[in-house]
Length: 363
Image 1 (cartoon, rainbow, N blue to C red):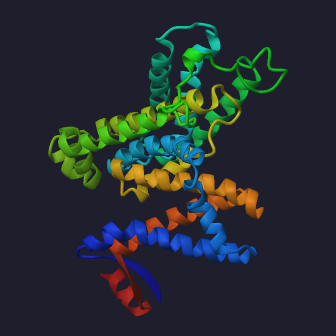
Image 2 (image 1 turned 180 degrees about the vertical axis):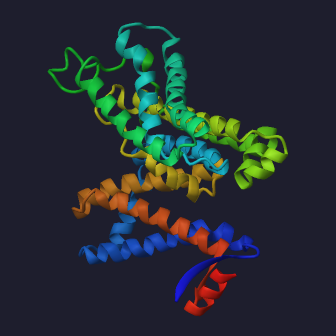
């Protein structure tokens, strides 16, 4: 006996829409079981994860800070995945965008100009896109698997950042701590509502980016090309669309948005470079993209949900004394159930007997 997946004739529209909600409910159930196994109150733990961060104004600001990069990266990855290109290295592109965007306030420290911040944002986008161009080139030139190359480049970016802040970019007045100088006021992405919290304009940029990408997908020829080539590269070539051109477009677009998210995080929330500038936003944004049904507008909602797990995880660590790995486990469970639900919507499981399998193989 063996198990096979047989493609369904037509996927239910209801279950296609409900799939993220089903995945979220299954994640909550498994999370409750997990906390019970750890000897913690499941209801209190889930309350800390998903309700407590919404109760106070300051925590809503923190939620916006966490959600901004998730939304921006997730929206870009949605386009990339819809086009059939699997950029798994957004974390590295996020880091590299933060590095390149920080060049001006670190190397030209003290340069005060209204041009500094816009240039930083543009340079961050260029840095992220340039880093994403490496797996794009390898795929189009050598047919290299972009999953592996983009993922391996993440660790290079992390090590490069660590070398910079411990070496040539280390703050000469920082008492030997591995960090750069604090950015000048002209290089800081300011808060949206300074009097009430520290949520910065990176969140607004993320919302704008998601809306613009949705408009592109729904009302432009480029969006139509993404859909066609993502569903069938062969059909796209018959229509005159370039598969290699779409690889470059989708990878550069997702890399640029990851880079923009990186410099927005560094400039808006941290105000300097450190050995680590991300708690894993680039990897979590993969879940954001799939939970949002590979729709840029869906990435807004799913980004807020995943941002809750970061804040809730911190609250659970303080109140319940659980490990920070619980947050990663929650996020992993969510991705697992999203992909599992989508698979069962498109395919049905069939048990094939040994004799039947031999006949099918013989035919």
